[in-house]
Length: 177
Image (cartoon, rainbow, N blue to C red):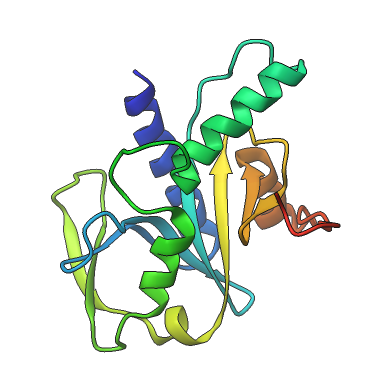
């Protein structure tokens, strides 16, 4: 059930961004990079955003120190692959691999809700040359705002930023955890 909700959440995040920003692409893949799918890529104000969408079920005792640590561990496992042998690369490594693609490389992205409905395009030069940010958008966030260059936002914060131009990127006093 969580997997299905996660796929729906990912699609809703993409659809919102496709309606409100420039050049939004969903489920971006290359033929040569297994395990390096990017959920959504979009541009806003001259910056390219690589987005990992995560729907997570709340943990028990989220208001206690133990509950907060459990949430942080869950994000560390899913985003940074800490403490897991599951396949796939940590999100920052995926983005780094995408930024190192050749400008002539072809990628595919999903254009409808049908997973087989994909379109091939050349990697947009902006993805390689422009400023970029890595975002994780989720229904709730870990206790840290940033880690290893990845910013964490709730879906509500994403909406407030895009739709209302609110500044949701709080200053981070230390360089994450």
